[in-house]
Length: 179
Image (cartoon, rainbow, N blue to C red):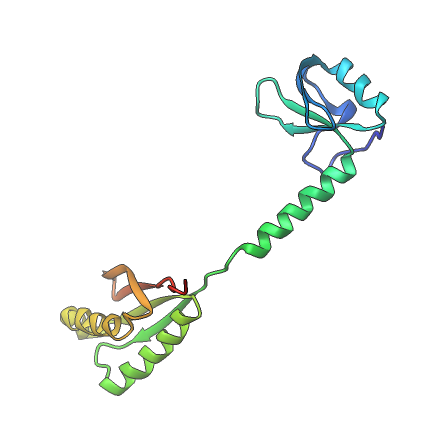
């Protein structure tokens, strides 16, 4: 049985346990029921294993007779697998202007198409300067034309809205239907 100084780890083990009674799980996964901590420590000592905390928030807390180092290794392995399967979505911004020409809008649309195809979100924004603030309706038209041009790969998550002097629209990539 190990007696480890467990300051940096989140599991309580062996002599760090401060509960009077615990729900005990044997090394093979069998539920042994609610037992006093001293009896659980004795069982773990007999098997030359540790008493490792599994669920501290349960009433009474759940502990398992297991090898502490093996438990920590398996936990780290699960976290690594979970991290691998996560997909990171980044937000790419495309800035348009209130008086953008058709060709420039096409170029910006192609860039947004590429970003959405890669699985990124796109934030399209128009900044109104000076007297352009009166022509926000033009901004709505430009953003709707922009969204129309990339509707095959992107869907509107947040409709165009005016926040101060900036009009913002957010687009999500559409899910691919491969199967």
